Image (cartoon, rainbow, N blue to C red; front, side, top):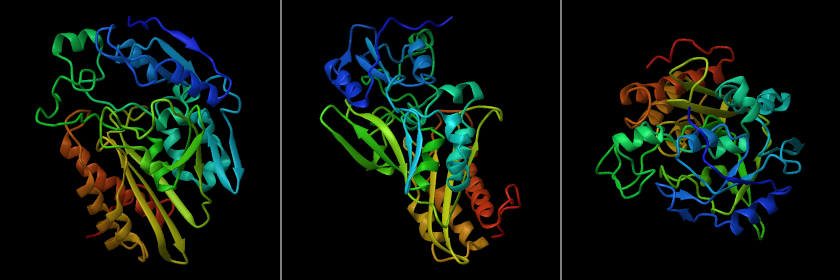
Length: 348
């Protein structure tokens, strides 16, 4: 049985208090006295990803700052825009009728995360900040000690996936992120001095270790979605087990119709690189079209070209690469012809 390491827990009542606790306890500093270097202080919300990682000793923080008792941490509020507090569970997001009706891709993505029990605990904020994954990283300490550490747990070691790579290639695999990207979401961040808002697309970096463009003393407090009039969206994923699993390829798609013409479009992918990615070339292939077979094929080709899977998770590289095209085609066909999921792919 894998056991949690010892830690102290702090339970702030506001996000500002949480940010102050991060700073006071050395946010971003490494503790080098516990085997491999680990962060001294970390945030925890539902804990569905962090606690398993701690059991495997990917992290052994001295202090956990729990967001479970932060006031108004779990709510969905509509005020022109849709505001989702970071502590809202994935079950609540998936079941909210406003999300299901107008932000369908997000409801679908949240409903496809893991199992009902974990969705009842896991939060939208935790999924947005989900740790990157890799076959060499997601192992017990015993396994990693015997087989050899990787760059993500020991920066002095070369990447075990691509030994010549100057950076960690661990995979971003959060389900809700591509859905949020195609819906134009923004993120609200709080630190001890104040807060700021950034486009969600600017929150991620192509780095398996330092995957987020957030300060170490910042807390994600809220996700905001703009008005969705005229938009139609969907999210599809490929995973090893149909009942629950992380995606090995995921595609979010959204189009805004003006009559029978696509006026705006966004396609985003996950699990095909170290960051979730908005594929600009796919957008360009769709805007101004009637979402005909040729436009769908061009967008799928653009996604296929942008996908950069590595041999560090389930599935083969070629399987995941092909899946990026197939999922894009299926997603766009369903947005053109509601109820057509599973239809034959567009003719070339």
